[in-house]
Image 1: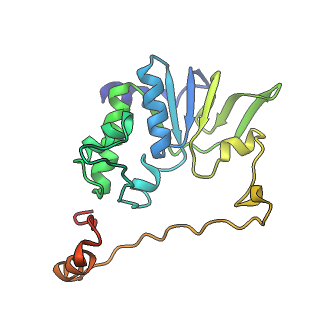
Image 2: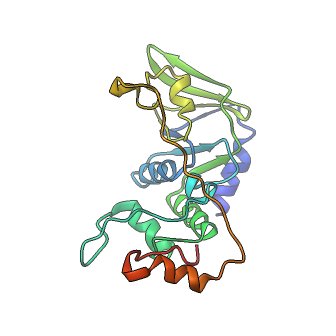
Length: 208
């Protein structure tokens, strides 16, 4: 933790910094991309415009995972399995514990993380993204990953895209966002029985 915090503090005074890989967006996919690259020996910077890591799982409270299992074990492996182990091997989880798990994975891999860093401008040469300009300074790398929910980096770099289901030729309508909310004062015993009536629902999200 000391190394990460020191790098974080010093980084704000840098006018220019070079990395092997810059990941924009500390979403679940951004965290795992950064961790995987760092585990392979790359110098990795993870930039996040918001205030925390974990994206929709932690900031959006989408606290239940879609799992693929056979009769004996979880089919997903790799870093997802590591994260799953850290949150207690439960499909529904506590969002604070999940964010702590992401931070632990980043710290152990040696990823440099900077929060609340919006993009000011991107540099593109010959169709290739080369640098990012931010309020904290400029960072360059041979490789970039846009893991932000908004695809802001890819858009600014000039990547082609379709919106909604335009690629089907039908129209540009998009899927509605998931509405996550909290409720208090419910008789949990009655809710549990209702959700598990005749074994229809195996996981209820209890404790999430």
